Length: 159
Image 1 (cartoon, rainbow, N blue to C red):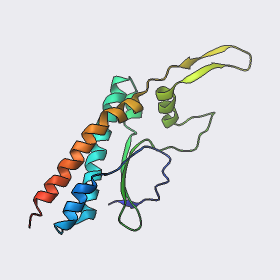
Image 2: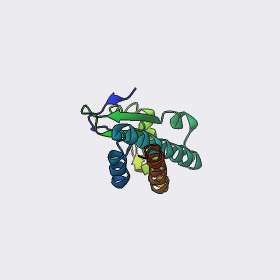
Image 3: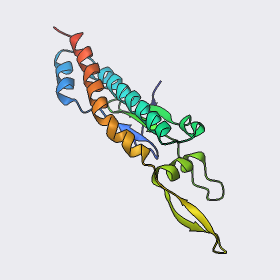
């Protein structure tokens, strides 16, 4: 079951459905646009999830951090907007005990060179950029999958 969305999420990448021509054709054929959009958004979210997991593994992100990727389907209170959010849940930041999600952020974006209060070198983390690569690689497959889902629904509605 989907939960109601406020679209003020603090985490993840939102996947949207932008195939207006296909949605208009489904509407003209008397189909359920809400169900079609919902299915297309979920299909796109699954594609992005697969790409994100794949890029995390290629970048050497530990498995326990990859396992915390969440896939959430959201619907606004009016029922006419949907979103699929793929990513990690972001709790408040505690510098003394950072949550695992912040370790993912440090791995993805890197950190500057750090020192202790006495001046000893604590090193740095070079950013790996796996989130951006996953997003970039998934744009075209998401669009294709969403169009495939919408076309499948449209073929079932021929008058």
